[in-house]
Amino acid sequence: MKNILVTGGAGFIGSNFILYMLEKYGDNIQIVNLDLLTYAGNLENLKAVEGDSRHSFVQGDIGDGPLVAELMEKHAIDTVINFAAESHVDRSIEDPGVFARTNVMGTVNLLSCARAAWENADGSYKAGVKFVQVSTDEVYGSLGETGYFTEETPLSPRSPYSASKASADLFVAAWSDTYGMPVNITRCSNNYGPYQFPEKLIPLMIHNAVGKKDLPVYGDGLNVRDWLYVDDHCKAIALVAEKGCPGEVYNVGGHNERTNIVIVKKIISLVGGKVDATVTESLIKYVTDRKGHDRRYAIDPAKIGAELGWKPDTAFEDGIEKTVDWYLQNGEWLSGVTSGSYRDYYDKMYGNR
Ligand code: NAD
Ligand code: TYD
Image 1: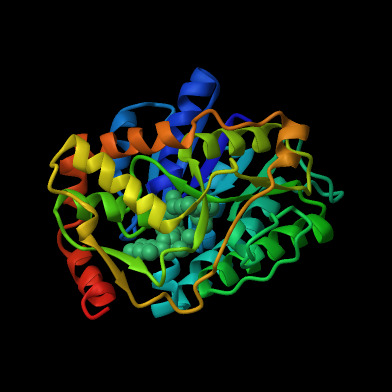
Image 2: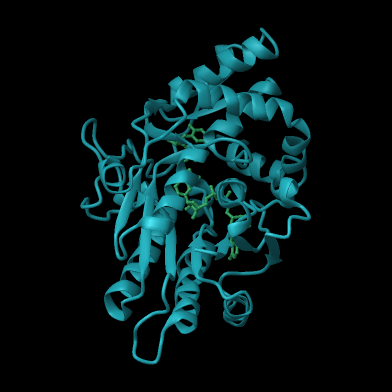
């Protein structure tokens, strides 16, 4: 793995991944970062790599065939890692079409371009090439009170977001089964950490708590998510890209199940302790539930642990404090992304809820 095409590298996980890879591989890596810079993409996330000759940024769409083909050829790409996606369930409920265009059709275009660049005349592939699809545990649907998602759990997506990610996963698997292309799919649980857009639970609650605004908890607040610090996800993707057995799926998660209300109360206590003691649980506001709200996600990460030696490094208590500190120290970043269209989004989603 030397010349990587990272897509969506100006978003939350993609930008953390680029920082992680440059640190890990030193001079042995070149990264081309293809990102459309939608509302979720932000060049501020890449300030630390500005001027770094190992990273080049290209603004563009993963669905743009000629552009992706040109990048594959010009940079002799040997590894594609596809982070680019529309990633927010609530937005997918409002406007599903763009989820099909980017998450499904964009992925199909990337697969076609990778195959055209890597396939030899006899149908074999150039040595050392790999396509990694960054997917989600949400493709498995919703769990009851017990049990875990394993790689054998049938796909049963329920939201337009998870339906689009599951469709993309099936296309990636088809490129392995039909054309023999070396691929992997990772399916991770909910991430948190620096640079996450404040439409998602943890940064939204930190932002609102700091501003002493209502903390909107959907439904009864007892839905369960399995939280993983973003660097641990990056470590897993790097391992899969390097050592994952072609054709295999790897679930990624750190056995960190929490109800949403427990997360919100933790954030209140951290922000209350660090910033302003008048930030209290009185800010919690139970609001109308999300349509089709999945009740519980929980990952069994045994396979990636046993086969690739992955395990998480950051305990939840440390990770959530680091994350709150990062948002407190990066107020300018937060006000940058919460001005303008974010206000319209917030009013539309939460105004009458
Ligand atoms: P994000 O929304 O923060 O970032 C997505 C990035 O993709 C943005 O920079 C955006 O500009 C870019 N993008 C969108 N459409 C594009 C297009 N057509 N062409 C090129 N770039 C485009 O998302 P994230 O949270 O960083 O998630 C990254 C990936 O990880 C997604 O595929 C998501 O499904 C997956 N994932 C996320 C989580 C999580 O908890 N956030 C968990 C598991 C898997
Ligand atoms: P989210 O961060 O959107 O991730 P996902 O839906 O992909 O798991 O939401 C995490 C959980 O938090 C989910 O159960 C919905 C809930 N939630 C709220 O209660 N209030 C909010 O304002 C948001 C954004 C999410």
